[in-house]
Image 1: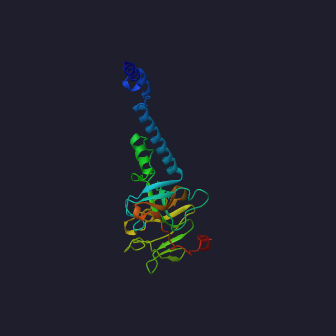
Image 2: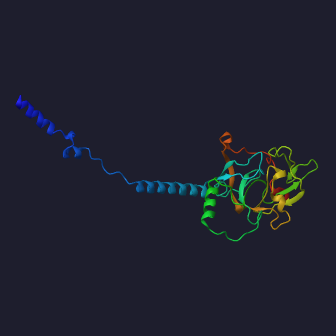
Image 3: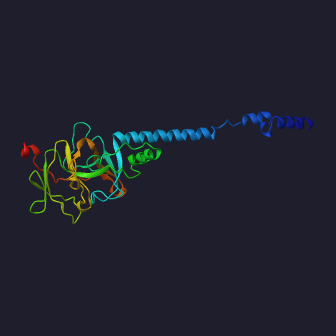
Length: 257
């Protein structure tokens, strides 16, 4: 009996679970990364993702927040649209009926001095380029009605817009709006565009700048891109519906060549 007791004592003394040094070695947990390292990694990944989004927005596809009702019912206040910046990059040019975003500096708004690159201005610009804030005051969204060489007239005896002597059935207009309350008869210079909003009674467009330098014509090189998709709200998610209003209109050189 004494011998069994001694064996049991030895067994208990060699058990690593009794808190001895050997037991403590077996349960040692490696040091975890510090909170500062984890935070730094998160910040780095966030900056990397933001930079990638900004580059994608700058060169490929830019979200654009619709700030006004000038394009209703096609586009509504608060809509987020996706602007295809590659649409006119490889020799293609805007067509009649395209909905485009453009920089109106020099045509819709006067040339201004260089803006200070303050942190606030940079943050606002970044937010606007991601569709999180209203665009710069010089950026506009309108529909192309006339391209270089076109003669655009409003209105004919039946109150319709005419392009190159052909009447245009503008089914996209805001209900109750006429094609224009302002009469005009213009020929669009080469490499320029005549643009108008779909909500004609609530749109400041080419008509409002007829007597100013440039005559309300937007240089093609100032076009940022074509609105191809609606990204928000989710209930209207999808490609922007096109129009056949200008189908069959003869090229400008057929009338003015």
